[in-house]
Picture 1 (cartoon, helix red, strand yellow):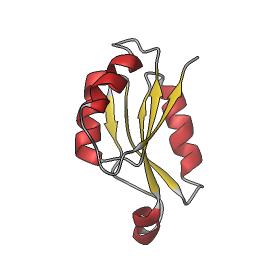
Picture 2 (picture 1 turned 90 degrees about the vertical axis):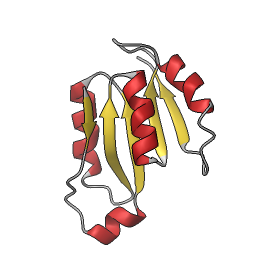
Picture 3 (picture 1 turned 120 degrees about the vertical axis):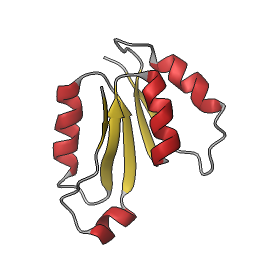
Picture 4 (picture 1 turned 30 degrees about the horizontal axis):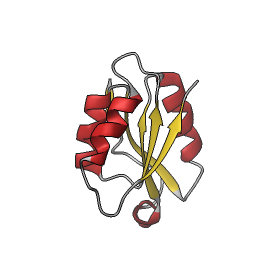
Length: 102
């Protein structure tokens, strides 16, 4: 499932200065929990999520996130594949990538 979040509870100027987050995560409840939490934090906004490594690569191209959270253990593909393919993008500026596994 791919989700791109286009509605925000904050003022437009707050969104413009917030760090955007893309999350490669297949647990929908965890994604919604983070999204809910981030509505109260002015410095970060979850702009998209997906449980697919392939879809995450497409979202990186589309959204240009500042931060990418990567779950290594996915139902469809692995976070390792995503990380390997992400290297070929040669993004500037480079997003900060955090790797998580549970």
